[in-house]
Length: 266
Figure (cartoon, rainbow, N blue to C red):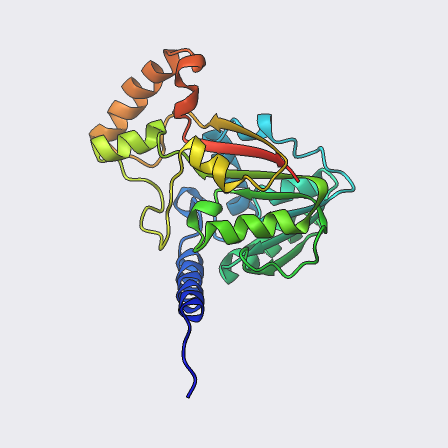
């Protein structure tokens, strides 16, 4: 009679959670509610791109999307490809994986609309189907905090990137301004109902990424006017909190950035 080991039980739980995560993101396309055009249309993707880079206006300043021409770039958790297509348009040879089939189907449509090449496939970021030392850069923006086993995902990112290759990753800051507002003022976080949502302190994030030889963590994403909130909360946030917060010198508020951007070298 065979016995089930603790390791097998843990693996089964992890697989079950990954299935729940995949199902969740199949039904929750990021920022879908902000799109004005039909899902899958060229205008739909333009809506998502405009909203993302308005809300995250820092992103194009700290990530050189055009700086990887001729390089192999992997995005884990690529979603519908809003960031990945920028690397591709910059000349990178891009691969994108995501647990959600809906996201990969839409990403393929997005790339087709722009006649851009990319290898887009359903895949598990905790168990990547690539050889060691394959990619010049790996990218995981807003993904690690939603996976079943963050350590396994980081290990996989480290495994598949080439020696001296770069990893760019982002998680949410547990000590960030948005987490404070969520806890103290009842401001709902996007996707707080996801099967997994873990936030990190800078120190915890640094420990998670300890396998990289070089590491820089930059807190980013500070308040901008919200298109999601309505009513009195929206009035308070957009007309009082945002301008007041942004009057404070960044030297003081830097550590409260909601996004902890990590730039790491293998």
